[in-house]
Amino acid sequence: MEGNRFGWIAITAIAPIAWGSTYVVTRNLLPADYPLWGGVLRALPAGLLVLLLARRLPTGSWWWRSLVLGILNVGGFFVLIYVAGQRLPSGLASTLMSTSAACMLLFAWLLLHRRPRLAAVVGASVGLVGVGVMLGFDGSGADPVGVAASLGAMVSSSIGFVLTVRWGSDIPALTMTSWQLVGGSLVLVPAALLVEGAPPALTLESGLGFAYVTLVATAVAYVAWFAGLRHLSPGVVGIVGLLNPVTGVVLGVIVAGEGFGFSQAVGLVLVLVGVVLGSLPPRRTPVSSPGSELSSARSPHSRDRIGRIASRDGTRRARRAPSRMM
Image 1 (spheres, rainbow, N blue to C red):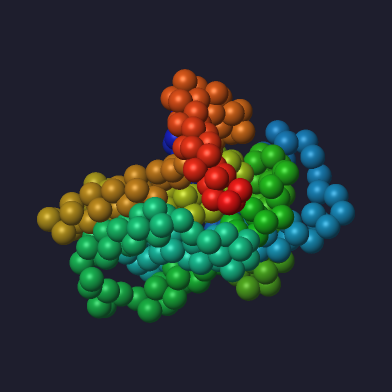
Image 2 (cartoon, helix red, strand yellow):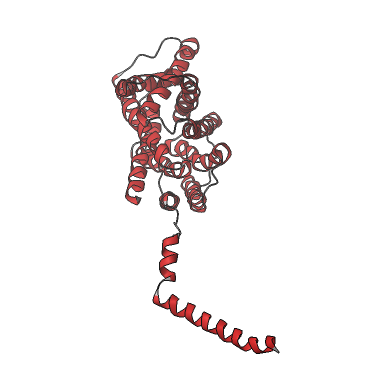
């Protein structure tokens, strides 16, 4: 049972690791000033591909639910992430997004009435401290639009992921992914045409960048994430999401030459410790069954004890009998 739990945690971890890499890709390979078309080119091909594999269309209330979740988890989220990726260093952008660990715990409490476990709260707290250490508690000079976009994406996706748990517990992860990606794309396409006009011309670099964010950071990552939401609590999934800033910082150092010192190393360790603490399974107290109580009552020690008690009661009654007769 625990092996299955940690297996699903490992699968879920694919998503934040892949998402942490999108900031570097967006900043270095994708065209600037096209956040709406950037969201369309990322979501629509991935959604159609996954829908082809799922082979299932929404029914009933899932038509409007797919649009709502598509806006929260895909449409608005992808646009805001695109803006954050263009305006902020990858380490800072992914660090701000990692506050979704605490945000998902809060929304799961409000919307699902699931009180967070102590281990999840401790893990999220340790992880957020690690995020702050990685950031160096120094956000001065950061682009305010980029910071607002990153925090907006975090809140939007946190609400969307918790609503996905509330509404779609019986929907397979592949199907859920396809509906949300296509639903978010249907909202983005007219907005992109009205605001940004024609889609940007793709170069070799931007084409490779879109191929990566479409296939790996969207199709594969969202299937893994929704599978985790189906088999794990939102609190645990949110804490696993702390791997997002780890990936963002590491790739920012390797690819973009961003600074990495002692504070980043300490923060990285704290984030990983927070993920481990928050992912620990709940303790199970052994429950005694009626059969076990009966068998214990029939044990030799129990019989001896019962005999001694009966003997004492008999002696007391014998002592009291003459006084009652007199």
